[in-house]
Image 1 (cartoon, rainbow, N blue to C red):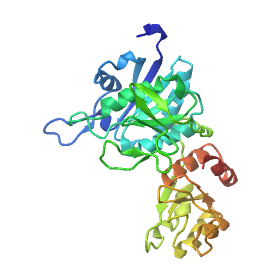
Image 2: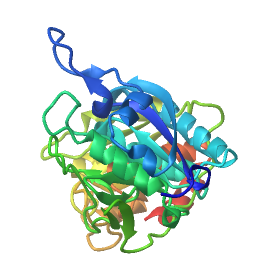
Image 3: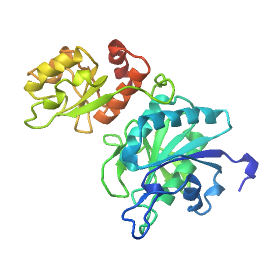
Length: 333
């Protein structure tokens, strides 16, 4: 073991989630209670790999995590650069972990490794996976080879890029995957091994302060949907993502409403399938991808609806107009 002064410093930020939950007898299910220091204290010998700095940001379930907190975390990561920190680990609820990772990838363009992890089984359950995931995340954040890669998710000893990762199972400890791509690396004998170096996501301007003030929602196309949720939507939101069928299709009844909305706010067309890309000129029926793009919708390419929403939100919060949004999306596909 090397001298302590020569070891990397890893900042561990706790946001809550299952990894920080406990269940007290007689009080029902588990709720977030544990601190960042508590989480580190539950992992034997985790201090062998780095000098650890524990900070608590929030104690919320992933489903209640606000965008403003993620913006705050991005600012904390930028500040950590000047503090001699080698990498940052963020623990949070898995419900929104893939979204936090992607938004941080968009907002933070610096060199520090940013590693997100969590747990599917809370510490009071047999086989709790939080300690192993946290250890792997610290090992990854401390590794020089992860500098410049951007935000990644480390879960079940796999390393996934923020751009590709998705939660694909509601309860399995192997809940995360990267459809169409797979993990970019694994943790082997306590060290991260990358199979490939993924291209870095371009950073977007950071929203002023800790709040975005921007409202972007997702509306999903479904069999027989009348599009009633689209009525008057342009008066209530600043941007819209359509989670469309297949390669970018919606019911024909939706077309007039979407054309009206896109005249007022940016509307992004994404595929609800979760893998593959929206197309641009294969089909030509009313409500097809070519029809919708001709009416002013913006193609999301391979970005799924959740990630397209966060990119649109970040662009609008950074001051982009519709032309700016349309010009930016192709860089993130």
